[in-house]
Amino acid sequence: MKRSRDMEKRSEINSAIEELSLMAIVKPGGNHETAHIPTKPFLSLCYMVLQVLDKIGPTMAVLRQDVHQNIMRLEMMHELNPSMNSNLVEILKSEASKGNTRKRFSCSKAFLWLTRSLDFSSALLRALEMDPKKNMEQIVQESYDATLSPWHGWISSAAFRVAIKLVPDTQTFMDLLKERDESCDTLKDQMQILVSLLVPFLEDVHCILKVYNLDRIKST
Image (cartoon, rainbow, N blue to C red):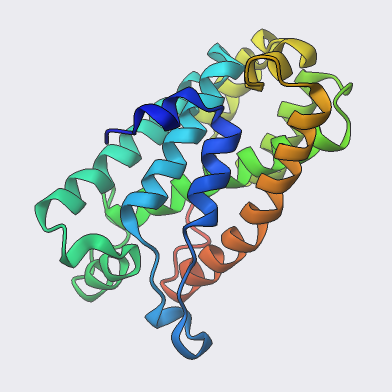
């Protein structure tokens, strides 16, 4: 997916804020079964997550690879029929009707794991915004434990435990997230805005996952 030059010049935080500001989950009558999540903006948001994971470093290599593969899977599905697959909920509905939801390489599973990666990113940014001086290794570990660990198998969990020793210190990570000449206070404000947009968005997404019985799936 190609992003505009303007987006590439902005920080990942500001780009994600813009994507979320334009991406409302439409729920006719409050019904999650008939909701609309635009596919391309959602994938653009996930690309921002990839860039944040890159800044954490080798610790997130396994997660980054999973995120990238899941983005590619949904992009390929979208490109097969851009009109029909412009709504992620319709993709979930189609796979459910064919009994393909729980297949290993289903788009439903790709959407599930991308959502969980967004959960992790939201938890990490919230912890950073609340206490920018907190140990980065602790922030990453606590964010992982709260979001991804309950769903990971022992292989992924073991790989994470080994790699977490490679995280940068908190200040280095904050500096990598900032735009040029941006202050730490401004970055904190931007993280707070992003988290305030992410939390309700992800709550709606998790409601949709429950409708399609995806919310309790673990990695094999």
